[in-house]
Length: 221
Ligand SMILES: C[S@@+](CC[C@H](N)C(=O)[O-])C[C@H]1O[C@@H](n2cnc3c(N)ncnc32)[C@H](O)[C@@H]1O
Image (cartoon, rainbow, N blue to C red; front, side, top):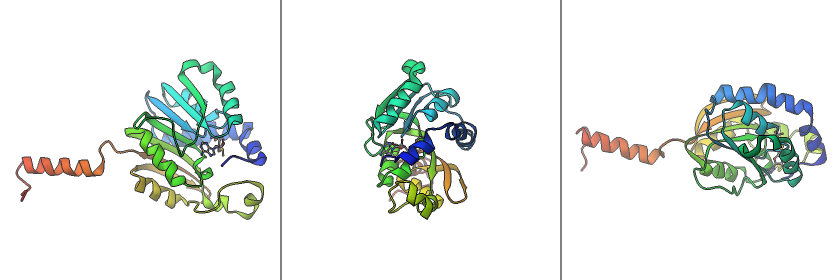
């Protein structure tokens, strides 16, 4: 769901950029660590401040970034022009990510999943495009903020089935992620880092059974 004019004004200003630069990105990297290279995706990049931070601070080699709103994509392209081939910005939808399975080492979400009506589907898509061992860094807005009567009057968000901090963590785990770390503020904002495991749980179990069988500690009848 696209931002209305009020939210655009709240996002496209120096205060929001400073918050991303001095608080959100440092916190996500504190929770999840640096990437040390690799191919990174940013979903819902807005005007590209987060993309610039990923390029400058996370150690990413290349960043693909997309947003549902062509107006935001145009702003991001202008901001990111000087990074040349290291960045590609396009119009796209997090519910249908235009990338192969396992394409990325990391995915960043700066506050967009709460804009998606079927947000669990967005988590599944992110999980799909991450490599095994890849990492999701997410900053999100929680239901307490979205359903607040004042904010409901001035902003436009999907209102059904929003998430708490615990609800978001639980959904990540149900999608197949393993939590690395998370924080919340005032039950309104949350920062979460989660890994796509290297081996699917069932494969890991099969491998453990095979190893136990090989060393004779499992009776395979
Ligand atoms: C709150 S803004 C955050 C923008 C930017 N990440 C930032 O932190 O400044 C949410 C952004 O998500 C985008 N968005 C909403 N639904 C989306 C979807 N399904 N796929 C991709 N982007 C989406 C909006 O156009 C908007 O730019």
